[in-house]
Image 1 (cartoon, helix red, strand yellow):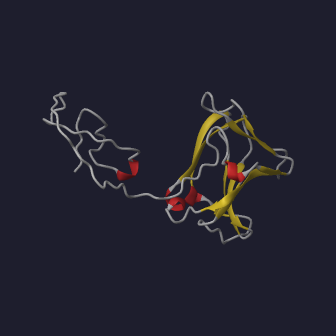
Image 2: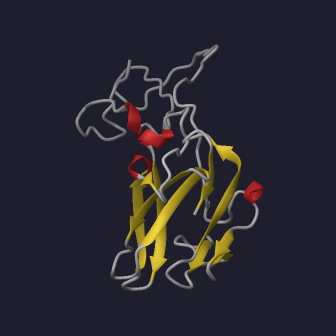
Image 3: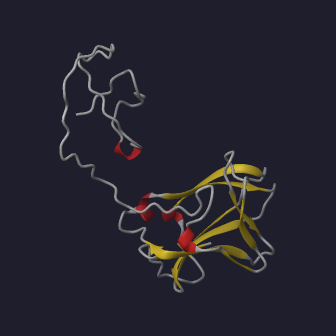
Length: 193
């Protein structure tokens, strides 16, 4: 079973919250008091298997670059999209820069191969999360995923009016059908813009 040792971790509500586990390590307590007592011996772990989440991690921009298989970003309506070296939120990282030309312009990526966000349950349980720098009073923007001509979902948001760097996080399940389409397929996501 699990034991909250008292010398590591947070007690919070005293419950093991499986969804919050980000990693694990083994500690073997000899006398159970955590007083640094020791002994010698051998512990053998055999056929240890970690089971659980086997879903897809979709990384659009990792702070340095976009996935190489996707190629260069596309843009339309006079917009520009490119990587700015050294411009990221964290020191030493890059930024994905988007410059909007007019009200009807945009940019994005063709995702090859298409990404399955259905099989692992990601679309219903995960979010898109990012830091973004914007000017004060920037206009509303749209995030959009596509799975073909008749499958587009989007989400409009307005950047923080104060401008500067802010963190944004939106549940994927909150994206709604867009541009009159109704057949978005979460198992074959092929465009992000």
